[in-house]
Image 1 (tube, rainbow, N blue to C red):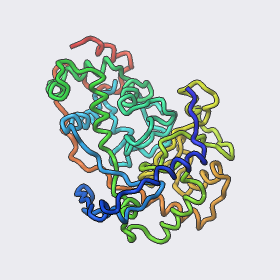
Image 2 (image 1 turned 180 degrees about the vertical axis):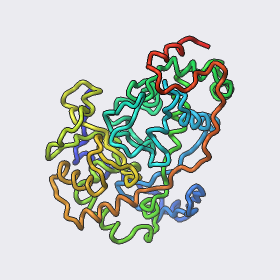
Image 3 (image 1 turned 90 degrees about the vertical axis):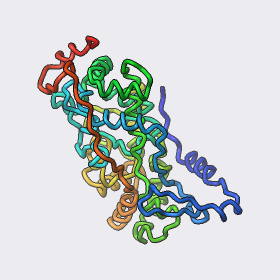
Image 4 (image 1 turned 135 degrees about the vertical axis):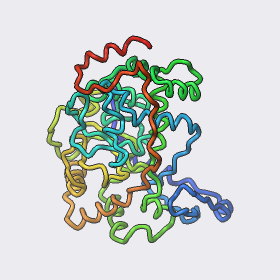
Length: 369
């Protein structure tokens, strides 16, 4: 499978077409939408909604609260890992921008990962998951993390068997899925349902898009205009400011390779995909340092300057850099807020945490309870 970057001219053409749709004037005049999920309880007047390449993020719509609650428990439950010590939240810390702020994450038995963990916030808006796009869906990504030797280092069967020893989980899975035995498909589906709610609407930029002229400053607005004029918008557009696509990291200049990760070529086997990565979201980007797949850029100003050089062939002045960084900080939205879950109690046969045991000890989990 060959992954192709979207040419700038095509991206602009598609963007122009997508923004050309209009709304009936009579409908606009009479239509006001109250969104109580926003902290400011803003009333949107569609006559004032700005049509920009970066669009507003909408709040999550929960259609199955029981499934989402189950997924939330699983997200925080370290018992899904071989060691009983690592949870999804260990690397995708919801108190730290949905990531861990490490150059590379720490996995089972203190293994150092090879790549910078992307944020889980707004991941439901991605065209694919993981840096190289090897996981097409959130459910596929969560299953991959459970089984990855560099992450949770468990197996699908071990995860199933462990959860089936916990009465509280058996009852909840029975309620949500009408099944007597918990399977990996239901585990990853519930996790994906919860992760789909982790969107961050109502940033100051979103408020400006909805017509609040005072939501961003003149300096931040100048940064946004420069962001567009310089060409950053070619890759960073849409609600998540990531264009939902892939791009070569070094377009104009060669990116210095600091680790063995080679981009999507590792997933596709096609050397033409070398250093091709999923375009990262810029939502909440001030929270998700360090930057790039290898964490090489420690600060946001560093990341802006490097991207200008290797992607655009441009050295931003100090003033230009300050303006673009100021704009990027307006993309920080309302982070999800909820009560931490109380996890179901382990059963008598549930394996106890043992993070220092050799991996072979997980073989006992392969026997069905």
